[in-house]
View 1 (spheres, rainbow, N blue to C red):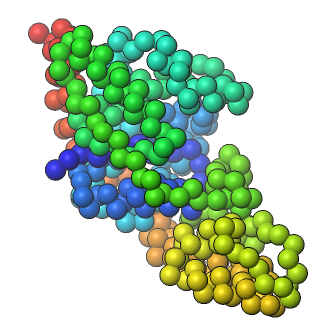
View 2: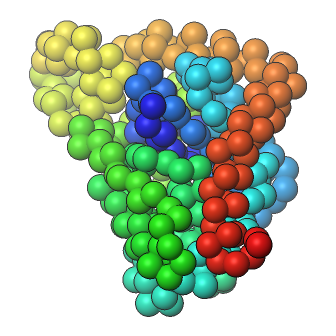
Length: 321
């Protein structure tokens, strides 16, 4: 069975955009492949600066995926930092990685343009990412169109290593989900913690209701029909319950229906869709030891994949006799 690998960075509150953009597709793929999913806590150190935050965000990602249907018997779920061998491999890869390759990385240039601190971790991010991808002998890596360069860099680094030391690494292929829509936030921009426009996935009732009722709408009077297609309300309803979408459009076109009524309808659909997940999430909150045991077991299974690959790289470079 082919190995599919994904890293999830623990950088804040999980929201609907995370679910539809990454979590749901990842959970679906565990049915077709040997899924290897790691929580990228080393990578998160480039943006999360408080230890308690990193611990909480890491737990939230693990508990969130489990609550939404990830099967820990079928899928290998682990913390990146529980497989320290990734750093040894990252160093070996770094000696064949051209500076120009890293300087061309979109993510680095974008963060610098946004005023991020320039440090080695941010600059060398793609090398550690390449180690993440190559260490587990992965065949496939899901990426969005805007993330394709990450995998291309990893493949370039792997090829340079193979050219110098021999055929050690498999070159994984991208899985580009063309159909994955960008989930809009309440202000119309892409839903993102950095924009402050999210609808939490596991928030309390009032924490979900407040942003839903704050969704940006136009000023159409209540006695006029509302054009809902292509709006934030319409896109979110399509994502949450596509079967209810046409009725939602019809309700919006009925004079006397206000945007407040439509937002309440969306809120009801969100509650129905995610209540079972929220109940499971609260279970894991009350039993954190269960999550920790799953992560530890996942790390053991991940190391079983990683160690033969690392040993092959060590022999090829001469580090092992």
